[in-house]
Length: 84
Image 1 (cartoon, rainbow, N blue to C red):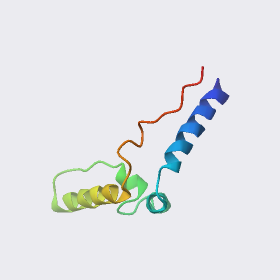
Image 2: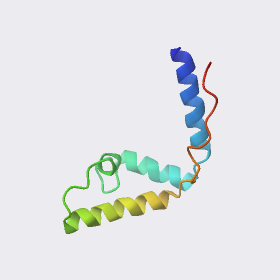
Image 3: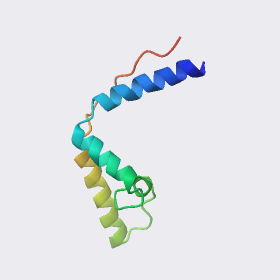
């Protein structure tokens, strides 16, 4: 069962990766390389906090980063068949 699950995940994630542009991949890798930076992975998943000017500007930068990724709208709509 584990190998079937692993195969499913690898196939699905490989399909997602194949649909990403090189610019998007570079931005995502930079986000992981500097996880605590303004658009780093750890920062992106953090809570917005109270509505202060700094927090609003931080969230604006996060949203701009997400838009810059230019992810295909149907990125997650295609899935391989589940293992049987």
